[in-house]
Image (cartoon, rainbow over all chains, first blue to last red; front, side, top):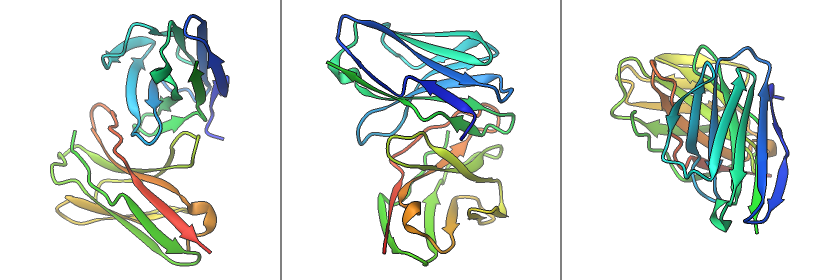
Length: 111
Length: 110
């Protein structure tokens, strides 16, 4: 148990659906990240939030829309996704020593 | 951020000590070396972090030579449950940003 909770653990959606991924941490950290991990590929950093402000967006398509309403919660809103967006989406919370605590991830399948 | 190079895969047997070496020739003065472990369909888990010399915790040891251009993760007496992907990363001291590579897939056999 890392202290970072992601829901749902699994999600199947059609290309026209709208869904949201949720990440929650109560570790007192001020920075949270979204990563994407496709099959047999390294983790790709998507978004970086620090003190609820987005500080980095690594050229992620607009069909992915992050939201950070407070330092404990991070969302990833999904709409009009493509089959190639199927992947494991991971959230991480970062402490003052820059150690990242990852959630278990959401396994997303886009049909 | 310094690029890291580590073996793609390694095999070992239960009870053996496993050493995974990582090279990071362009490491900067403020950078730390950090290792993570990842099981299938789970998020990576922090193992150990160090700046120089030797660091040991209840899970592993990390050896860093004086020039800091490489590091070695040492796992004592591995078990089947240590089968996982191990990532070596250089963490920017100022930013904390991580760049994950392919990692080393460790297969522990009975």
